[in-house]
Image (cartoon, rainbow, N blue to C red; front, side, top):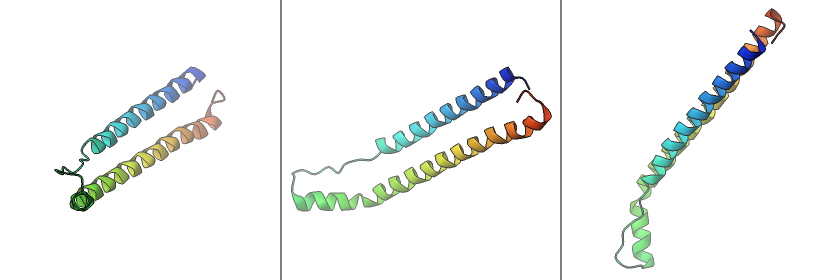
Length: 98
């Protein structure tokens, strides 16, 4: 494997990482877009509190979904990081150009 091949492989891995980051960012943004505020006729503390409490299940659903996506994103980055290192480690003893 030449130095140019190694640079090309690294660039391809970086492109894949950037693309996957964008996909995760769009998915997380779409979750936030669906968070709705309660509609109340007049601003009173009691009405606002009851309206917010009625939306707690949807807020919990948003939070759980966001955390699941965040965990997948973190795992994906760990996996990509592990993909880059072994290739160099295994290639080093075989060819002197790595």
